[in-house]
Amino acid sequence: MTKSIHRVTVEIRQIERLSDRVRMLELADMDDWELPPFTAGAHLNVHLPSGLVRSYSLCNDPAERKFYRIAVLREDEGRGGSRQVHELRQGERLLLSLPRNHLPLAPEGRVVMVAGGIGMTPFLSMVPVLERQGRPYELHLCARDSRADAFSALLAPMIRSGKLVRHYSGTGARLDIQALIAGIGTEDHVYLCGPERMISEAQSLGAGLGERLHMERFGPAGVGAEKAYVVKLARSGGNIPVTTGQTMLDALRAAGVDIPASCEAGVCLDCRTRFLEGSPDHRDIAMPVADRTSHLTPCVSGCLGDSITLDL
Ligand code: FES
Image 1 (tube, rainbow, N blue to C red):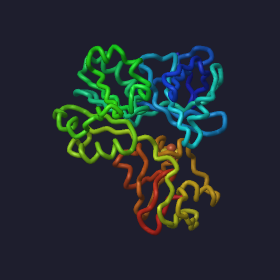
Image 2: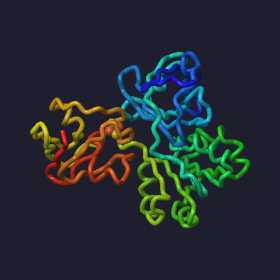
Image 3: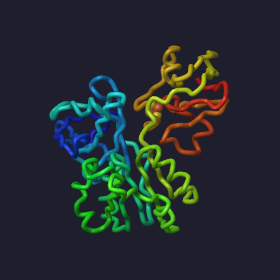
Image 4: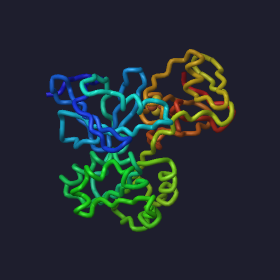
């Protein structure tokens, strides 16, 4: 039985150290109720005790309904969310959003997954589904070296079966994305999750794959305007200047405009806002292409001209 709720309160049942910088948290209902269902590739927002909200991919088999697992890389130079997650203790309670999926598995075809470091996390929920479906797949794990590889130990059976291929750049075995894309069949789907550089390279090399190329970047946190522009509010009539280095969201907040926002990294789409005029510089990693002609994400997106008009 599942509780009918829009937010989920969980407790941290277990914390596992996967490497020096990666912790895996197992989150469960306090009374052991089943949690809301999710599909492979989904993520959710974690509301941290400080008020920060961060998005993390779900790492467990979607068929497992009694817990969620997330894996978090501690980013010492980041905005503080991952450090706070690493300070959490077993038994602490957390508020979660419901799971959402911007990286769903295609219903058929061979699946080739490429993970850059912590980008492995969405694929950990896809592998058990692909196994059950008996579909052909392969998973490429890119890391600097074995010390930076937090996930191989979890995937030992896949290493033995040859379905997991490890590429350690520190030993000169960097993944050749061009060769990988050249070997993709006409029915295959390619999934990538990793840092911006990896995704950009795959995006240009794999443009011919069209909708069979699925990507999730690490969020471009803290992206500010490269040049100043003005946000015009169509309904309330305000003109709000966005200064160089400032995000549109910060400028709106400073002017007293309340925009819902969670991840502030272009991942969750909570801040999605309709625009009426102007050319946005879309920098989110989640909005469907069809929505980009009418909506933008003010937490990370900018403006290609001197002004943009929002439906606010
Ligand atoms: S707050 Fe998450 S996409 Fe903007």
